Length: 212
Image 1 (cartoon, rainbow, N blue to C red):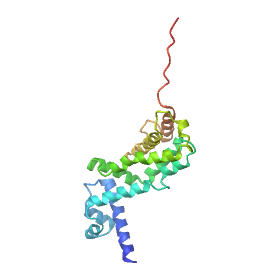
Image 2 (cartoon, rainbow, N blue to C red; image 1 turned 135 degrees about the horizontal axis):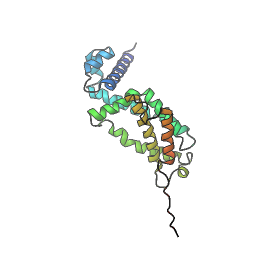
Image 3 (spheres, helix red, strand yellow; image 1 turned 90 degrees about the horizontal axis):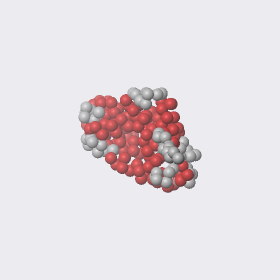
Image 4 (tube, one colour; image 1 turned 90 degrees about the vertical axis):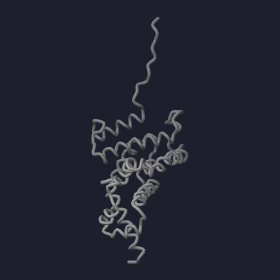
């Protein structure tokens, strides 16, 4: 094996080990020695690849950020393959898949919020609106956004809101183990959420008819 291949394997082992430890123990409770032991490497080898523990943590977040921009990321696939804007069930399935495949990465967002005041994830969230705006502009006609949405509801904000609702729902289920967080089974809950996103939750106001 060439030196470059060995180095890349060591780096991957470090990131995999750190991801498991950070997502289960937290950042502060994990040491560089812990990461080295989990990776099967010396502490010196870990420092050779990353100058400190925070560099590993930030690399893991950047790793997930890059994944979310790929065409095969489930949310992106769901949005690209939907024939209409309100295909929320497809979006819910995509959100569930994200938490199944990248549960540990999503857990790092909570770790960052608690232990770093969200310092590392601020850029990710601050750029989401622009990313959804680009998608909305490019797909406005295909998804018939102007036909589906009220004139006072920006398309990008609507798409981002719907996505975040389902990501949050499945985050609570996957990370906290709460399977009936709305008091009903998940399939019923996703249908309920989809219905609220389509029609709202309030009745139409009634007009009082004055008596003659």
